[in-house]
Image (cartoon, rainbow, N blue to C red; front, side, top):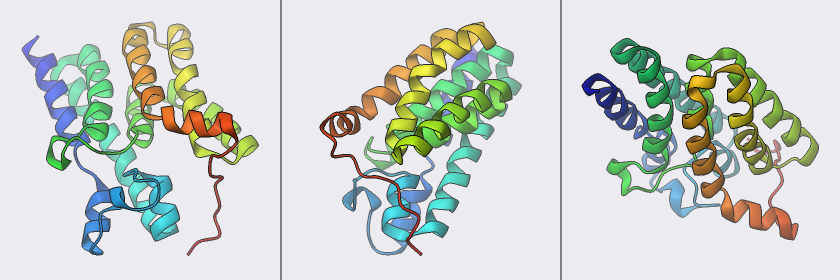
Length: 194
């Protein structure tokens, strides 16, 4: 149990690393006070352009991968599953940034890649298909979150309870987006910037 708790703590702290907050503060502003107020890839794309968004995405994915690899090294499969959940918790509610972070999607992708590449691939495919159809990253994120527990039940059953929690957290963090989607007010993705 100690090693699983250590895996969770390590993953949480890794999740606290926020490239979007760090990069925006280096430019003299905080990304959480701009655009949508979210410390994530899509808001970085809208505010700072493609390069900043790409760097944010890569670092957020890598921190998910690292957290799960460390969790697995510390406590095997249980540690990896716990790390998968807690890197997202750390990303969304970072203690070092006043518990106000991103929505956890890119970190979740990285964590799932390290945990189960097939589960990550299926989940990402669903997200990308919905994004392509709707031009809304939030719609793809929510669709992937809804699909994750179902996919994990068939692909990686030991992960199912963690997948339920992850899905609930991601959907909760997207509740305002869901409201805007239902009202037809959600912003659509554009790659025309920088």
